[in-house]
Amino acid sequence: MTNNDINILDELYQRTDTLPDVLHLRAAEPGYEFTEADKKFVLDTYSKLDDILKEVAAFINIKFSGCERHVRAWNDIDFDTKIGPIKIITTDREHIKREWRKGLFDLKSLIKVLRNEAKLMVEESEESLHSKNGNLKISHHNYHGSFVQSDVIKQKRSWLEVLSWIAGIAAALIGLYAVLK
Image 1: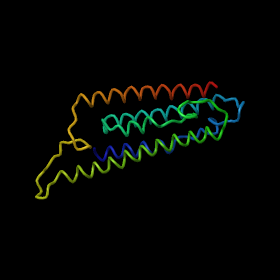
Image 2: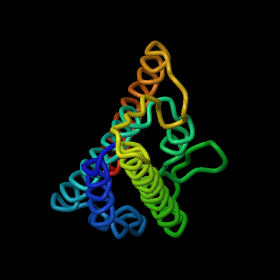
Image 3: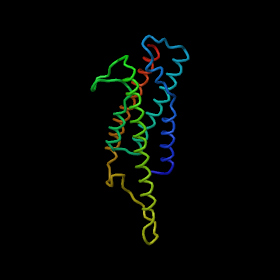
Image 4: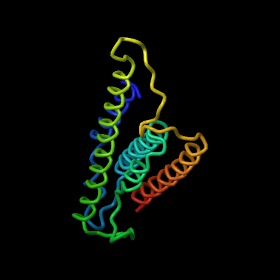
């Protein structure tokens, strides 16, 4: 982990924080007809969100390989209305707004957690470079302090890649559905 990784996470957080507000369209009054500009605005916003989600998934896949809690947290990010585990279509504007805000909150929280852990790893790495007597010391363990077989890493990566691919498709379909509705 390097300071560049922390900068990447800062940039992802900034992009998430400055996503255009689409709630007025996402939770529009029933019967509201989207203009072409509305459709383009929503599609562009969903595209930006999809890019951020894919980049966070890739960061977890590469930098926190094998860390199930980060994968689980990423999988739990959801912007859709649902009752329990079942996604629903509703005209309840407040419910739509609440779920959208919850999704953004969950995404920002995950990025903050990744950043905080990356920062600790960078500090730990910098401290471990020099022993007490000034000799160079390089640590060859992963974040969890144990050696990991490359087969396990590859298997975890493939599942995360599949999940990120599915999430990307789902986000695109949701965006298209919202635009065409």
